[in-house]
Length: 359
Image 1 (cartoon, rainbow, N blue to C red):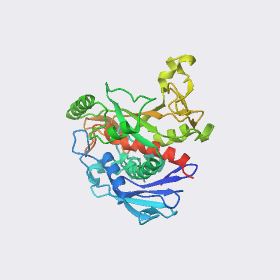
Image 2 (cartoon, one colour; image 1 turned 90 degrees about the vertical axis):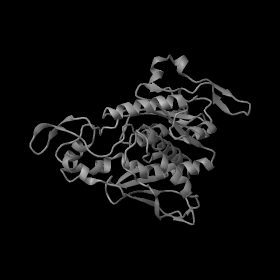
Image 3 (cartoon, helix red, strand yellow; image 1 turned 135 degrees about the vertical axis):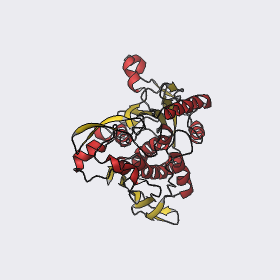
Image 4 (cartoon, rainbow, N blue to C red; image 1 turned 120 degrees about the horizontal axis):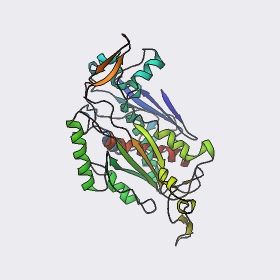
């Protein structure tokens, strides 16, 4: 079981990709919070595999089953435990991989750590499948925050070398976030979305895969939440984002582009708006200053690596014979995980904000 320990909540995820079930335990939620199961199921469908060219053909219903902590649609104050039963495993697809670690996967490192007792089926506990219970927790957090006036959304900023425009970091609105998250393919520009889909289809036809960048935003977060050093909301958010197996890069606000600016360019000047609220003219800080929320939109981007399971022949080793060899990965895999990772990134942001706002 892997556990995220926040200031006010903790989230524990259990199970493996091909175990009977996977699930999540959320502790620290006060009593009386509304649990909208229909909303959670809708959110989960965004993470689930589709019939599109980029998606795995493993079809899981991802039906959340509430075991404890919820009664009559409200939290009771006890730990909320939710289970998803796995129903479409094909474990035999992985039987030949026990001694031949797949490039780009955790097979080799898990073997060293767990001495051969690890569950290798479908990546076991290291599989992207484990983001499903994370999304359950994220859906609950998003619904609660929406009631408090905080809206979270994301879009596909790029796939391979095809990019669309970034969110307007100063003026991005709740309406814009809701609109893009309601789309079948999560780009603001439909034209760019079609180009990305064509690129993904080309990679799939070539027995290969692609990565990309997701941009995620939260609007309506009040100023003054977070803390210094280890208690900064940036620290919490980074830990959550890097818990997702496919993430290899993370930046907030101007991020790495800020290294190309002078301080006079990177600093965000303050002003009072017409309602007497302190804001900044620009938002290079991405809504977080000194580890604390500024009241401006929180903006981050995450780099998602290409799916490592590809049908091309790859070089590896045989851990039993200690020889160099080659491997062809069988099974059902995504040619691009980026579209399905959108609600996962939103879940990370929602949990980071929830941990600060909930008391």
